[in-house]
Length: 202
Image (cartoon, rainbow, N blue to C red):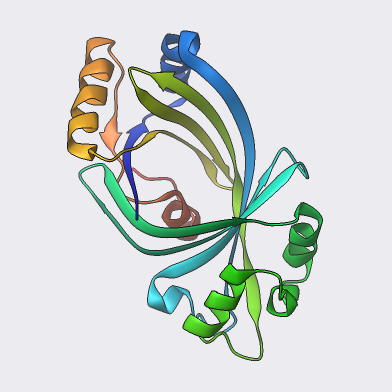
């Protein structure tokens, strides 16, 4: 179970202000491309699950993830997530030709997807995706991720923090943001949810 605090920022200027505040604690910046897949008969999404390939810096690294049963409430997201490394060249080939996912026998995660969700003979379809620029910071004992997510229909900004004690850490982050005049709202939908809705959150 992945548990994260998710706070949405209203605009680019607020994102930049927070980025400047956190700059002394910057660890790295990641350029991510997220591509999503479903079964051709919606076998995954009908069971509140989704398959994702995440590419880092083009072809440098790729991670396959299965995410299921998402719940988000009061800025805290809980989701079942399994991940494994995936060959970036093979990953790109699967984006171009999603049927290739059905033929990959080296992945225990894909084997689980095929068996648990009974993806049929027509295999997988690619749903598309979005690009994300993630600043990673080590601040006050927390690992913070400041995201700029670029969709075809606009850009969203979000602060995330994976947490074992989300209620405590949420209060710490809220106090920090409020003391520094950073406007925010609780995220009410995941990035994938935003992508599928085709519109930015209000």
